[in-house]
Structures are given as C-alpha cells and as structure tokens.
Amino acid sequence: MTKHQSEIDERTNLAGSNKFEMLMFRLGKDKVLGQSELFGINVFKIREIMAMPKITPIVGADKSSLGVLNLRGQVIPVFDLPAIVGCEPETGLNILLVTEYARTVQAFAVESVEDIARLDWKQVIPADASGTAKSLVTSFARMNDDANGEQCLAQVLDVEAIVQMVTPEQDRPTVTGKNIGAKLRMKENTIVLAADDSFVARALLEQTLKELEAPFEIVKSGKEAWERLNVLADQAEAEGQSIYDKVGLMLTDLEMPEMDGFTLTRHIKQSPRFSRLPVLIHSSLSGTTNEDLVRKVGANGYIAKFQPAELAGAIRESLAGSPALAAG
Image (tube, rainbow, N blue to C red; front, side, top):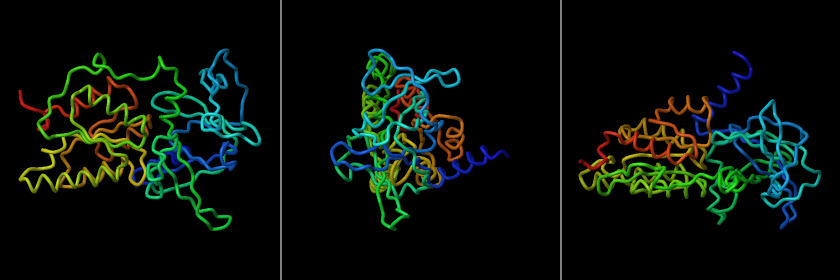
C-alpha cells in the first residue's frame, strides 16, 4: 500500500469515528479587533496547498477575486480569503489553498498555514451558541495551545456560504418548481428530518422541501438530529405508533459540530429502534473516498451539494415504497 493511500485510509477511518483533521491557517489581523486569529477547514476539502503562484487577473472581477490560476491545464478561480472575512494580512498572501467543494474546484489565498490538527467533533461548538449563526463561521474548535497550555478557539469557516458569496448570481443554485419535479404526498404528521450546520445549506434545503410539499424539520448538528429522533420515537411509542409514523427520511450533512453525519448514520443503522429509517447523505465532501465511507456506515444514498433537481430526485428515490408516503 502506498503512503498516500495509507493516509487516505487513516483519514477515512477517522471520519467513521466522529473524528476529523482540520487544516489550521491565518488570514492576518481582524480589521475590527486587530488580532490574528486561527481559522480552520476540513482536510477532506483541500485538494492541494502551494506557495503563492502567478495569478492572472480578470478585468472587471469582484473585489474578492484575485483572478485565475492555470493548474496543470485546469483554470481555477482564485479568491482573496482575508478580504472576504474582513482580515488584513501582515506579511501578504503567501499560500494558496486549492479546495474541492460540491463538484467545483476553487482556490483561496491565505497568509500562512499553521498545522493539521486531529480533532473529535465533540470539541467543536456550534456558532449559534455564541450568536454568530449567520456569519461565515459555522463553529469553533477548542484547541490546546501547546506553547502555554491554555485552550484557544479556531474558527471553522462556512465554505458553503463563502462559495455562495463569490459565485456570480446567475450561476448560483436556484430552487423552482420547474427543476424540482413531482411533489411528494406524505402521510399526515410524517416529516423529513434534516441536519446541516450551514445556514446557506439550511435555506436551500428548506426551499427544496417546500417545493416538494414535504413536511420537515431542520436541525443544526448530528447530535441535535439524534436527540430529536429519540424524542419523536418516544412520542410515537406513547401513541401506539413507531418512529416510521413520525419520520420518513433522515437527510444529513457530513461535517457538523458535536456529531458528524457518519456517526449519526451509524447510530441510526445500528439501533433496532431506527434501523429501517432511510438515511440520505447530502454533502459538499464529494469524491469516491467519502462515497465509499457513506456506503460503509449504511446510508441509503449520497448526493453532492447543491443540485436541487438531483436532491429532489434522491429524496423521492429514498422514500419510494416507504410507509411515510400517502396511499393513492
């Protein structure tokens, strides 16, 4: 086995145990507080890290755009990440992070890369706990500062929101009845339960489920979803029903604070109480490695973000033949 394949396998196994690796980097001083903070992004989103190469500017581009990079024959848009989040680099834009997100490739210029930290999702606090739910930060990772033994926080960026910001409006995903297709006819009091930590993703999910006319609830982490499932199961039992009378489908992201989608799916599929509940993974972590792991933990399907028509089709397919659908 090659060293590269061994590293991939190791990271894959980490994801299956509610752990992940986060690339830590700095963007310079915050324009408001004047401090240089740590930021992070899941290593699975990183395709390549390189010293700042030559960038070709684009006439008339948005101020967050630095231009494009010709990377081995592929033309990739390059964005000024400090400018996007409101920081001022002290030493310039020195490093380029080439990222793969939801079937797209783009690069972000940063000031410096610090380290790769191995974390448990339990160490990650949802951003809404500090009143920043609609910022460009989804959560905060609690890190140990080896220099002085104190704990510090790294801000986990909402890549989905950032990519949405820098994508031209005409190229952004839209949810309309035309591209969603046939409506769902679900039994009364039966819902689709969805989990996603990105406010942008939650908004698009809500639009899609409304267009499908599917009753739903959306929570912000795997932990919240697992707790809500158990509450609904308790209610169902008290009413002489089963969880399948309350929830027709679990629709979940993979990267979430406290409990990731891999762990949530494994909990569901290994529980006698929920094992027959369809689980559909909806994630920006595209690629065969993640899709293989999705199958390993027992999910019923995987759909890369964010293609409304494909998502709607995957939801219909996951619910095909389900008792959650109304007869007729």
